[in-house]
Amino acid sequence: MSSETFKGWIGVDLDGTLAEYTTWVGPTYIGRPVQVMLDRVKAWRKEGKEVRIFTARIAPINDCVMPRGMLTFQPRTPRDREAVAALRATQEWCKVNVGEVLPVTNVKDYGMYELWDDRCIQVKSNSGLTVAEAYEQRIKNDYVRRGVRTTKMPDSMKLK
Image (cartoon, rainbow, N blue to C red; front, top):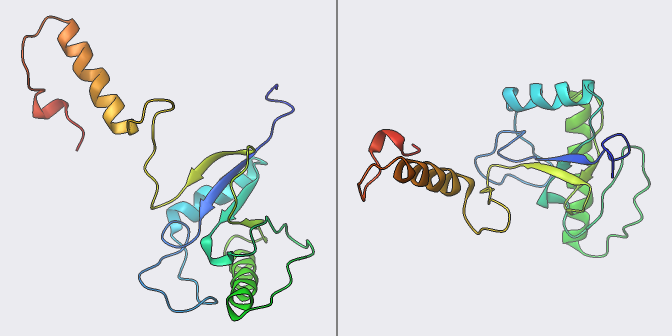
């Protein structure tokens, strides 16, 4: 698949990543924007990248709701109605803060090539190691290859 045909999308978590979050207030309350992340999202949009808000708030909708897209989900329970209210609040928050309504989802698919989330820990593919652990291991292996005989990596080489 060439880079010209594959566009994909970037997932950005809402609470604690794009919007400030300290405690749950309710499905329609969304905190103030985290300015650094908001600026990043706006820059991606200017570059033509697709950005989707990735939030558990809209579960159990379990779909991607595109701007101006029809919501086919039929709320049947109080939790369902909360999810729809959260979806509408998220869309309005985007309109006010991002300047446009972004797609909102809580579902990963093969088109997502990045996820920005305050609760994620990135893992190096096929290793089970966090990226930090893999980096530290690579540095240590390089250190050993150079013939330095030690069982302990100097603190100055460890990730903080």
